[in-house]
Amino acid sequence: MPEGWEWDDTLFSGSAPYYWRGRLPYAPGLVELLAEVLTLDGRGRLLDVGCGPGTLALRFAHLFAEVVGVDPDGGMVAEAGRRADTAGAARKARWVQVRAEELPAGLGAFTVAAFGQSFHWMDRDLVAATVRDMLRPAGALLHIADLKTETRTVDGLPYPGVPYAAIDDLVRRYLGPIRRAGRGVLRYGTPGDEADVLRRAGFAGPERYVVRGGQALERSSGDVVAWAFSMSSSAPHLFGTRRGEFEADLGRLLRETSPSGRFSERQPSTEVFVWREPSAR
Image (tube, rainbow, N blue to C red; front, side, top):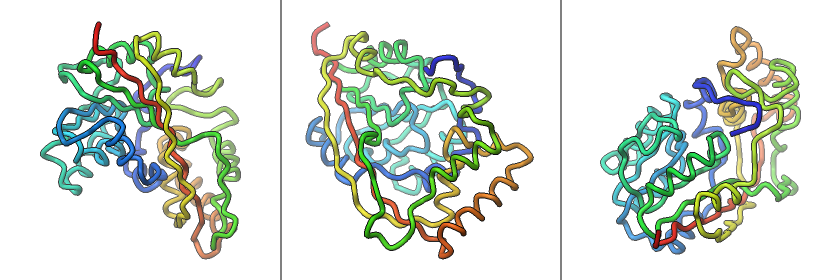
């Protein structure tokens, strides 16, 4: 959990309708890589911790007999349920509104547990130890995130890049210089050192894999607005009565950057760490 910050239930309040559209997808090939690495064959159970609107769980649903997504935000859980219905995965997917710190919550044992850019929001030592106890012998824990060390440019692409730095400046004008997160602020950012946490919990590893991105993507102004509202640092509720004013200013910024309302991006690469639950305890 970030230093100097306490979790509260407004962290992603109002963001669920924007998340799927606004966030960039994981790199193509992620599912195929992990299906091979973990020998996934349509059996077993997946626990997606901090599942959001089902971003990971629904991509992997066909490789498991059951997927269970847990998230503390009721809007995210509801959105995941709608997405599962649309994807035809409702019969094998279950969504539970619960904090990771409240696991195991009677959910049973799992073959694989996944954290998709969510682990840093939790009491990591507690959650890691609990999840290890929920894994079947020789199960695996996945820590999945965009590769943070790569530089992505839009050189050679048809539209201007998304003006992320200018959007950040605009958010700071409205919400202050320190990144917001729910009712609090992230004065010291989010923590790293996941490896130390997971080793303390008794996991073996990790095995590191990078699924390369770089593919050209096209984004609309609406997609970029959705991205802004999908972030904990600029969730809709943070703007209060000034939300409409912020959205109007953001729209003007985007039109000035790209009068066509189209933007180019490159797909981020995806970094995966596979941690194993030793078969003998």
